Length: 361
Image (cartoon, rainbow, N blue to C red; front, side):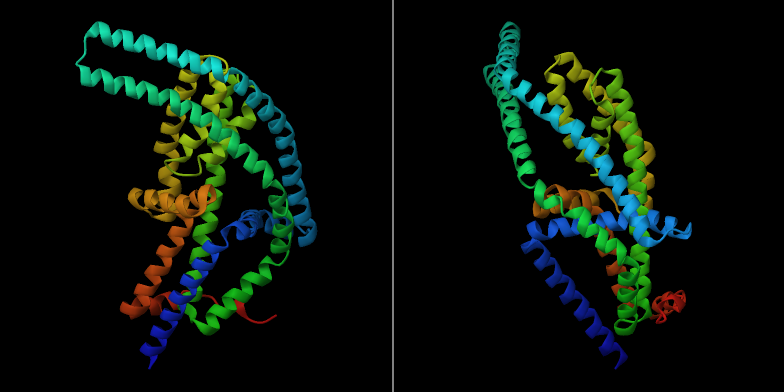
C-alpha cells in the first residue's frame, strides 16, 4: 500500500512538472518578466532578511533595496543609452570604410597566396574563407542593430519587473512556508527536505555568481580603462554579467567590445582579444571550478547541453538559468531514486528535517 502511494506521488510530480514546463514554454514571452522578477526577489531576499534582523520593517527594507537598485539601474541606462546610440551611429557611418578595409586585407592576403603559389583548391578555399569573414562582419552589424531595436521595443514590459518583484519579496516568507507545509502534508518529509536542499543550492549558486560578476567585472573594467575605453567600468560589468553563462558567455560579451574597438584601431581589437583570453583563463582556473563544479556538481558535458537547450528554447535568459535549473532537476531525480530504490537513505533524509518552522502561526 505504501509503495503504491509512493508511486502515485511520483507520477503526480512527473505529470505536474511536465505540464508546468509545457505551459512555461508556450507562454514564455508573457511569463519572462514574472520569472525574472522572481529571480530578482530571490537574489535580493538575503539582503532583505539581513536588514530585518537589524530591526528594519520588511516593507521598508524592500523599498530601500529596490530603490537603490533602481537608482543604480537608471544611472547605468543614462550613461549607456547615449553612448550606445553614439557608437552605433558612428559604426553605421564607418561601416562602408570598414568593409573596404576588410576587402583590402583580403586582396593583400590573396596576393601573398599567389606569391606562395599554393595549390588551386587551397587558394579557392582560403579566398572563400576571407570572403566569409567580410560577410560575417556585415551580418554582425545588421544583427546588432536589430537586437537593439527589439530591446527598446520590449523595454516597457520589463519596467514591470521591479513592481512584480516587490510584491514577491513582500510575501516571500509566507509563500515559502506555504509551499513547504503543502509539500510536507501531501508529499512527505523526504520531499520537504529536498525542497530545502534545492533552496540552499540555489542560494549558494546565486551568491557565487554575484561574486563572479563582481570579480570578473572589476578585472575587465581595469583592463578596458588601461586600453582607453570610455565608460570602462560600465562595459566591464556588462561583460561580467554575460560571463555568468558558462563557456558561451565570454564570446557573447566580447562581440560588442570588438565592434567598439573596430571604430578606433585594428590593434585595439587584438588587445581586447588578449584581455579576454587572460581574464577568462583566470576565471576558468580559479573561479569556475569553485562555483559550478562545487555548488552544482555538474560535469562540463551536462553544462554545455543545458546551455544549448536553454538557449534554443528560451533564448539568452534560458542560457543564463539553464544550468541552475538543470541542477535542481538533478536533485529531484536523486530524490526519486532514494524514494523508489533506497528506503534506508530516504528514512535518514527524513530524520534530518526540523519541522518546527512548519507549525501554524
